[in-house]
Amino acid sequence: MNQMFRADTDRAQEFEGRVIGMINDGALCLTVAIGHRTGLFDTMAGMAWANSAEIAKAADLQERYVREWLGAMTVGRIVDHDPDTGTYRLPDEHARVLTRDGEGDNMAVAAQIIPVLAGVETDIVDCFREGGGVPYERFERFHEVMMEDSNQTVVPNLVDKILPLVDGLVGKLERGIRVLDVGCGRGRALNSLAAAFPNSTFVGYDLSDDAIAFARAEARQQGSTNVAFYSRDVTDLEATVEAAAFDLVLTFDAIHDQADPMAVLRGIRRALKHDGVYICQDIRGSHHHHGNMDHPLAPFLYTVSTMHCMTVSLAQGGEGLGTMWGCETALSYMADAGFSSVTQYELEHDIMNVYYVCRP
Ligand SMILES: C[S@@+](CC[C@H](N)C(=O)[O-])C[C@H]1O[C@@H](n2cnc3c(N)ncnc32)[C@H](O)[C@@H]1O
Image (tube, rainbow, N blue to C red; front, side, top):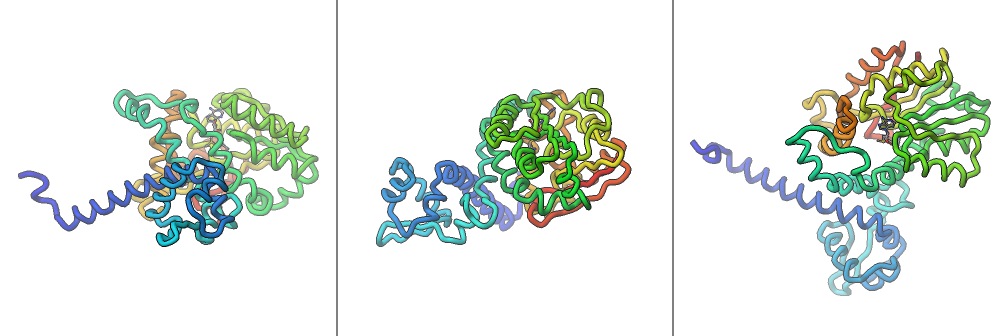
């Protein structure tokens, strides 16, 4: 019997409606990302009701494009539209979540991940057929978007929320300790710590030459002489890192996508002084698909995994753990890497991640 004849029509229709919603929301991610990159949301946040020409002029953009974009924003119910006057405005409540100066997190930053992933779709389809992975350098704007994300989830919360997970750590940083950030990307977290704690010294490692060059330039620009960035593959960290050299090691979203996460964790363990501490921010979730059914970001995170975190690891001949390696796997890897105690924390400002405080 044809499969369709057995299908429950109501369920099929309901699902069709869902798929239409997905297509619309996926498309809106692209136009929201454009609104962020062009500064249109920021411009509109400061404006009263205005027509497309006025908005385009204020944002210094082409009117025809702005008008079409306003169409997407209007039907997507992101901006309000008054058909009588032909004007638009971004409601304050939406500006709060879509602008650089909003009080809350700017969710348009995360929307940019969708077009970043879309840029490698054909490479990923090829990998489904042939295996292997898509390397970092194929992802346009990856480090730029990561930096923007780090700027709002990590940097502003470091001193008040993340470092206080370890009793007395802020005081130690004030007095002067050695800190390592593994997979530091463009180095915003480390540069902000270097500025806040001039008596401490900071080292950042990342695979990307471009990200490291950016981090160094920012360190120079802010006049920090207590931070050094090195372009290096940390897969060999266990064999090459100076033993017992650091009081604090940090990783922000940088373990699950490693080629060899266990080797990196062992390297971090080796790099720590006997009374040192490792703070690991990594993705919140379960190792089991069924364990993530109520996770508010699970479809997004599995997609990021398929099209980025898992594949960049496989491209290095790595394990391909994936974004959703899960807290169970993380805890078992940390124990196997030799950490004697690991405490897991959830911080209110960061629904995407957990924080592990690990001691040698
Ligand atoms: C998801 S990003 C996080 C970047 C940064 N910590 C942040 O929070 O913005 C993961 C980082 O790990 C780096 N990375 C991945 N594999 C690496 C390797 N084998 N050696 C060194 N760095 C690596 C990537 O270049 C990337 O910058």
